[in-house]
Length: 339
Image: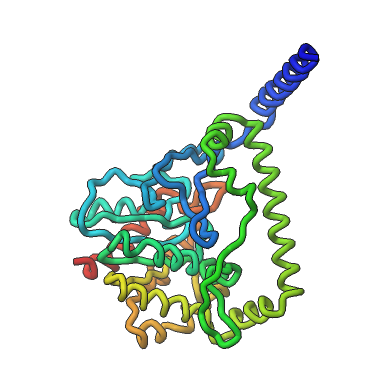
């Protein structure tokens, strides 16, 4: 009996090793270790107090994360903080620390430490949820919110904040599967970072999970009248959800004693990109509500007119040249606001 069990384990081990070798030779995987965790109400955060490897083709980047789920740069701590919130563009997806536009801003404002917890896939609702949870802990003198092309559509597809039948902004939560918490296990991270087989299996499982989530979302749209009404309200031309989120940002910034600055990153032109139509049609909203709004739509035309030059090849995120240009544009816009 013991001999049979031993032979079984040997057979399994040899099979797994063979599959690992075959994948390494004929179908090598990108050995990216998981660097996302779940926070309050299902908010997807970067890891904290940890390091991760992110690989795409020949590009291999090491991320370091601090205690605030922020991308940790090698700057000395300072009393004055600037909190930057955005999505993967502001995070610096597949870009070394020193080449990201937030790092470059940090290096020129000597009296401030930039805290950058921005995360891939975040929308305005995710950024607001993080702000509510961590602003009092960080106590930033300034908070800069970088608005990107899918922020509003992501917020409409999120349950972190939604509108009730009276158009009141309600805090909710995003559900997730228990198996998704596996990404926070250190042993699992080590295996994914070093094994082509584990990475292959992980990607297949992720595809199944995403497919199920999408199917569940479609079913809810059909069967849940309240959710259908929420989506209908969010998609109307009054832009109620967008306005409510920014007004909530303003109110919470006042409570946290931080100066709020909104920046349209303008990777896409809001004159043609439907998901950014709110920014095109509601400039007066920011003025009327005394919210600082910096519009980069004209400045970023240099990138939009020649995207191939400014994106990571075969991937689509801003490359080092784009980050350098974004840094220069943003710095010229904010340098007289940061004192």
